[in-house]
Amino acid sequence: MSEAAVEEVSVLSAIYCGEGEFRLIQQSAQDGLLVQINTTAGGETGLNLSLLFHLHPCYPSSPPDISVSSTAFSRTQCHSIRQKLLDQAAALPPEPMVHQLVDWLQQQSAEVTEDCRGGEEEVKEREERWTAVLSLDHIRSRNRYIALLERWTQQLQLTGRLLLGRGILVILQGARADIKEFCRLLKTVKVDMDSSGKKCKERMMKVVIETPSSSSCGHGLQRFVVKEYQSSAEVTAVFQELHLTELYHQILPSLTD
Image (cartoon, rainbow, N blue to C red; front, top):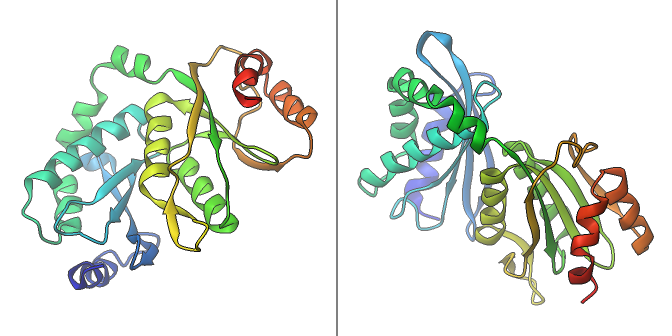
């Protein structure tokens, strides 16, 4: 990672020094830096936003990846704010920019959040809940891998199950855009170790199925839970518990190939 990025993080920790404002989540030469900044938006309303900046090793030559989450805004509104931040980042020169982006959001917060509140019908449509089942080939660096999956589901407000056994399945439920972002993170962040012991990205993940959730689908999905299993009967039982039996029958042929 660049010295400029490390120096910027040090400066950021001094600027955002209030309780819970700043957190350095990850720092490594291979993966870069992962920084979380909690701020407010919406002018006088002071609505909370959590901003996650992934500074790749090549940063600031390339802009950071950004994730936005909030209990005050819908998922669609968070994605809209994220896109505005990404557009702003793309327009800035290749130099340390995290503080500029947060400052810009705070200055433009009233306008940005007002834009995000518009189009309620479109929001409702895009907020439709989806269910997806992913298949992972292996997990070698178990603690790191699982910790990242749990963190991403929390940040993206996804619920589901991680089933560990002869096969590895991830059941997710939430906004379709959030599920797609989860899959993007899996393929762009080094989450595991390869056979030689080097950190690697998840290149062999497969989306087994992705479908709109029915009214009863995923009834038991209130959070993300890790569960180990020994037999296919236990996997069947999990899907039954979550009222996903019909979905399980649809994907069973692809799981037994």
